[in-house]
Image (cartoon, rainbow, N blue to C red):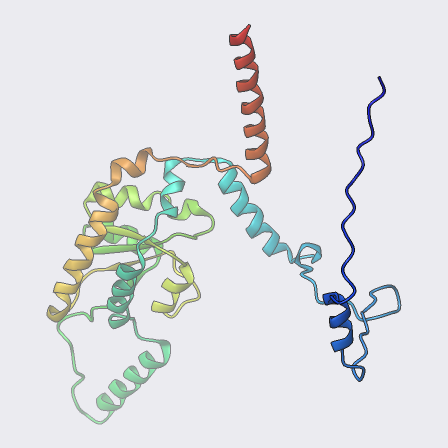
Length: 269
């Protein structure tokens, strides 16, 4: 038998005394303001603003930064390099930079003014003021810091996490652990550079502080040890990277689902 055709039920028409809402809406429109829909064809209305960042040819250094970041996410990163992704928390970093700001080295202008004043005193026949102790300032320069760590004169070492090439400082945390000197890794070599009047600085070291700042330094050292020195075994075993993109994850999920479906079929048979 041929299949019977199903007839769709017709909706009953509105009674004469009930008016539709569409007609009311049309009547309420103000005749003074004519509706003019925009047409975005060629040579017609101005196109709306769109996000064209996908089509921008970014500078070479920007592309390198982005490619490097994606590569570090995709590839497996060994623990020696991965430790530089674990930086000091924000609150502790604020306290650290407050302390570093108190012991900034003098600028060239300040040094020139000090030596000029000293020379004028000597020329006037007065004795130069000889300070018995060296001024307490933050030490910088990777070679200088290395010698301070090896001689155990450094009380705290601050390392930047974005040094390029990373080989310049990759060995410094291991040296600090071996010599028993507290160290921490903070964000931005430029931020360290501002402390010592330079563009960038790979690492800084504190060799001593005034008596009123000893308590702040000890609190910082205890916080730094809890985050870095005490977790040294965990840091040395933790690999980084291996994070795939959305397309790769979807592909793997699809493959796993197909394998699970096939395994279910074989069990049923």
